[in-house]
Length: 119
Ligand SMILES: [Zn+2]
Image 1: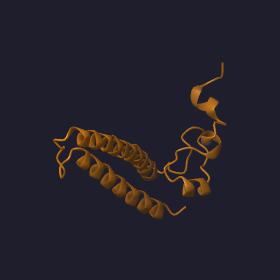
Image 2: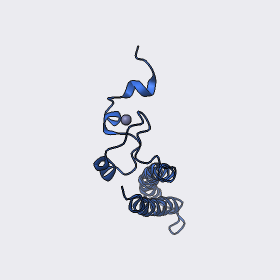
Image 3: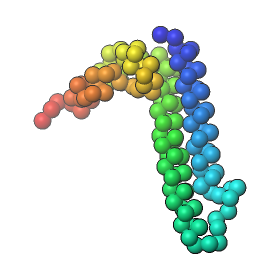
Image 4: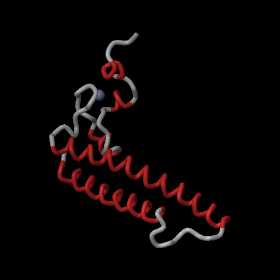
């Protein structure tokens, strides 16, 4: 696997997500656009803020996954399943670069390994 290419891709994604999260939170704080004095207008702005908040928190959640993937990459565990310890399928990593588990574990096939014995 070309880990340098993966790393580049993850770093680029991390920058995009950081930018998106900070843009959304700056806009939600009305740094460039103060809250209107008009009540109806304020309601619209607050609804818009909720949307921005959702954008910001989903960007941050993905950012954490990207950072975790970068740490796994640095420690040589990137392509190793965090649940069962088997290798993660290369085509799965290509499709879902931030995943930390193989297809079987992601689909719940090895769920018992993570939680101990069933029952
Ligand atoms: Zn697994």
